[in-house]
Amino acid sequence: MNKKIEQRLRRKTRARFYIKGTDERPRLNVFRSNKHVYAQVINDRTGVTLAHVGTLSAGVKETEGGMVKRAAAVGKALAALCVEKGIKKVVFDKNGFIYKKGGTIDALATGAREGGLDF
Image (cartoon, rainbow, N blue to C red; front, side):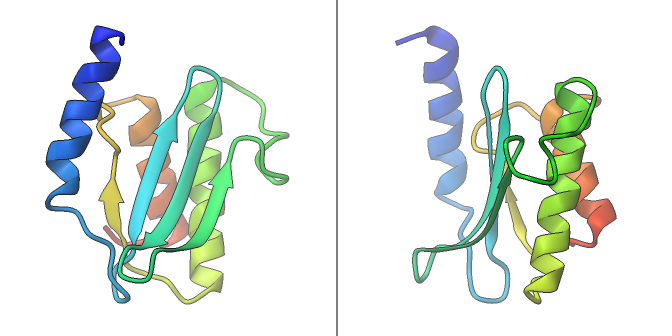
């Protein structure tokens, strides 16, 4: 396996020991590939995905711009979906990806916060 992928999986395993989604605060999980970004809100106690949005989703697919702009659109769309379902607070799980200023994960988190999610 690629060294970068191994490092990400190691970070993911360490973080998942502490991050758990509950009924009050479900887990907002993020996955980033080279072309797309996916985010889902999960209740780990019941094992149910409450909401999910990706760059291939209907409202986000038409977003113009690069990966960072599309990630922000995914965050806003997911936040709107969660607020509609009555979810206001979440726990952010960056899934082992590096959270750097101006990056994809940062843009998604900022978009979700602007949309009304609290984490």
